[in-house]
Image (cartoon, rainbow, N blue to C red; front, side):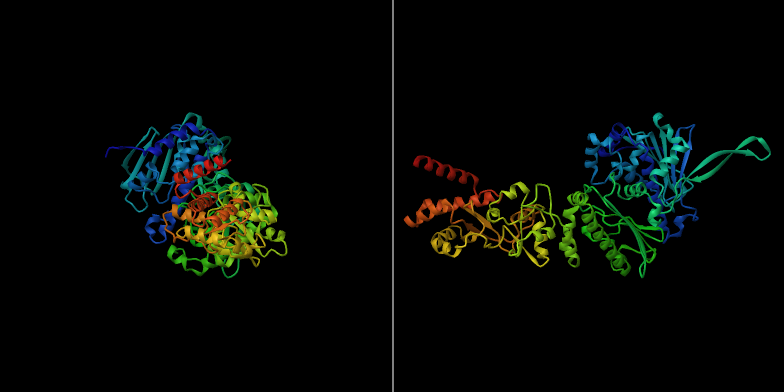
Amino acid sequence: MTANKHVFKAEVNKILDLMIHSLYSHKEIFLRELISNASDAIDKARYEALTDASLAEGGEEWKIQLIVDKEAGTLTVRDNGIGMTRDEAVEALGTIAHSGTKEFMNLLESRKVTDNPELIGQFGVGFYAAFMVADRVRVVTRKAGADPAHAVVWESDADGTYTLDDTVKATKGTDVILHLKEDSKECLEEWQLRKIVKQYSDFIEYPVVMDVTRSKPDPEDEEKTISETREETFNSRKAIWLKDKAEITVEEYNEFYKHVSHDFTNPARTIHYRAEGTTEFSALLYLPSARPFDIYTQDYKIGPTLYVRRVQIMDHCEAMLPPYLRFVKGVVESSDLPLNVSREVLQDNKVVTVIKKSLTKKILDTLADMKKEDAEAYGKFYGEFGRILKEGIHHDFERRETIADLLLFESTRTEAGKKTTLAEYIERMPEDQKEIYYITGVDRASTESSPYLEVFKEKGIEVLIMTDDIDDIIISGLGAYKEKEFQSAIKGDLDLGAENKEEKKKEFGDLLELMKEELKDLVSDVRISGRLKDSAVCLVAGEHDLDPKMVKMFQAMGQELPKGQRVLEVNPDHPLISRMKELFSADSKSEQLKGYVGLLFDQALLLEGDMPRDPVAFAKALSKLMAEGVSAG
C-alpha cells in the first residue's frame, strides 16, 4: 500500500511553524517530552496487561531505548509500551483536541516564549517539540497484541503535511526516529544524552538505556585495546516519591513537579511524606505557584497520579482530593489497594477515604504553616488560588473553620493590595462590636466609594472588602467565625445610623408611604436608612437574599432566579429628601414629586452599578430637572 498524504489540522500546522521558528533556547527538553510519552505508553501497557497477559507479549523487560546512528544523523526513542493503531496515530500525531491550543499559540507568539519554552508540555503538545531539533520525524508503531503486519509508519518534515502507511513491526510499542538538524547533532553524543536524561528524566520508573561502546585492554595482547558495547542505564529509576527526603535535592523535586504538572515554574511548596499504620501510603504533592489557565474548565484534570505497587493505575485520581484542592499536583502510591482497582470501586473504598482525609489535612496544615512562616509567599499563592480554596467553605462542612483561618481579604483598614485574616479583623474589633462587617463588589476602588459604607466610615468601623464573585455565597455559608456573625453592609436593616431613627420614621412616614406606593412593583418596602450619611437613597437586599453581583453572575450563566424585591432606604438628613417632604406637605398629589421618586429609584440602581430602567427617559428627566434649577437660579 502506498503512503497516504495528509494535511495537518490548521492549529497543528501553526504550532509547528511557531515552534521551529520561535523557540531558541532549552531545546533539550524535546527528549524529556519524548521519554515522558514513552513512559506513559509503558504505564498503559502494564496496566492493561494486568487483565490481558497477551499484551505483554512475552513479558520482556519494560524499557525506553535511545538509539544513535551518527552516520545517518538519527536519534531514535524506542519504547515497548502500548503502541498505536492507525486511527490512534492520526489522532495523536495529526490533530490536537486540547482546549488550550489557542492559548498555547498566543503564548508562543509572545516575547515571553524564549524565556519559558517548557510551556510546550503544559498544553499537551510535547511530541511536536521534536521539530525543534529535527527537520524530519518518523514514527513506527504497533499496538500491543496486534499482528506484526498491522503496524503503522507516520512521517513528516513539518511542511504542513504528513504521510501515513502500513508497515511490519516485530515488536509492540513505538519508535520515534528524529533526523537531526545540523545545529542539533550534539544530541547524538553520549555525554549530551546522558546529561539530558539525568537532568530531566532521572526519576522515570523505567530504565532509559543506550548501547555504549568502551575501549578496554585486549586480554590476549596488553599493548592493544578492543571495543566492547554494552547497554547502560542513564537514569536512577527509583521513584522519587519512594526515596528518603534527605536523598532528594530541591532541583530534583522541582524537575519532578514539572514532569507531573507540565508547568514551567517551580512549585510554591513541596509536601513529601509517608503514612504508616493501618493504612500505609507514600505521597509527593506540590502546591503550584501559578494558576493553570484551564483550572475553571470542565476538562481540567483533578487529583494526583495513583500508583499501586509501582504500577500506575490512574493519571488523575479524583477520589483522592476534594475539588477545592484541585490545584494540588503530585503522586500517591499505596500497597493497600488491588492492582485492578477501578474508578467506580475507588469512590467507595475505605482505604481511599483514609488517604483522602490524610492528604487533605496535610495540605491544609502546610498552607497554615506557609501563612504563618512566610506571609508574602502565602499572599502570592492566595492571589492565584484563594478563590478556589474558598469553595471548601461551601463543600467541606467539617473543615469550614480550618479553611476560614486561611482566607485573606482586603478591608477598609488595609492598604490597597494588602490583605488581612478573619482572626486579625476580630483582634481589631472594639469590644462592643458584635458582628464582622463585609461588603461585596467588583473591585476595591468602586466598593470603597459605595454609599453603603458611609455610616461605617463616619463611625470608624472596619469593613472587609470582598471582590470574588462567589464571596457572598461563601460567607453566607460560613455564617460565623469565632462566634462572630457576618453582616453584609448591603443587606439587611442596619442600625448604625441616626439614634433618632424612630422619630424620623414618624416625621417622614407619609412621604415614605407615597414612595412605597409609587414603587410598589419595584421594591418591597421604603424605610429610613441606618447606613447612609451623604447619599439620598440606596437599594438593600434582604438578609438572606443574594447580593446583586451574584444575581448578575447567575443570570449571565442563563439561570433564572426568583425575583426578590429589595428595599429602598432613604436618608432623612439629605437636602433632597427634606425638599421632597416640603413638596409633599404642600401637595401630596404633586406630579413633580412622583417624578422625583422615580428618579431616586433609578439613581439607586446607578449607585449599585446597574442601569436605570429606561436610560433615555432618565436622561431626559434629569435634564429637565437641571433646566428648572437653572431657571429658578
